[in-house]
Image 1: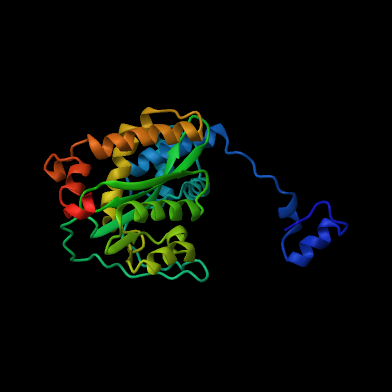
Image 2: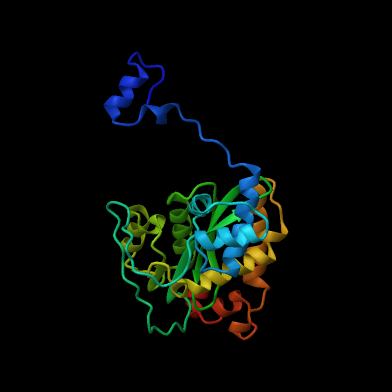
Length: 275
């Protein structure tokens, strides 16, 4: 919006656009190596103690000799897209124009593929920096239907993953997410509404509503991400791709009677659809 080559001074352009002049000159600073190390440890602690908020994470880190204040912890949690998981009143409001849909899965028996899909985003540490991973998962089989890696938490990469899953595997009866702004955005929900898919959203801070995706994050982090130190986004994308191929096709699940997600998904599909 700001044209630095225009005859109109930048100050007047900013005033006309009703934006802060300071924001025009601001250059974002990269995350420090110290903060990246803290974020990596916070991510590990979040898997161990998903109920821990900024105060508890501060205390846990302080006990490990890492000096960190509550506000700093809260800032890093926000950057990571991390939130303490527990039942609490829904006092937050969606982004302007974003609709929150009710949770549709309470008491529902999920007994077949493509009945319910779910999607979520998680933080992925690298050797230097970090990225975000989004995945679409079939609830019945635990199969990862599509996924994307992104350097930002904008809705676009979630929409891409959703559209790929729909193009490759048809469509579910219900699609479940949390109340993140990516999933409540018009760009995302319009894809589901156009396809006639019922939209379900977790209660605020209720991890049980999307527990199968949370289990996927635990598996991929302990079996892949924490064992690696990705040098670049392309390195992260390639390595995660190899792991998810293994996860879908070769890794047996005790909850699936030792079947792989591929077996649980494709063996229960109607023959015409599986083909």
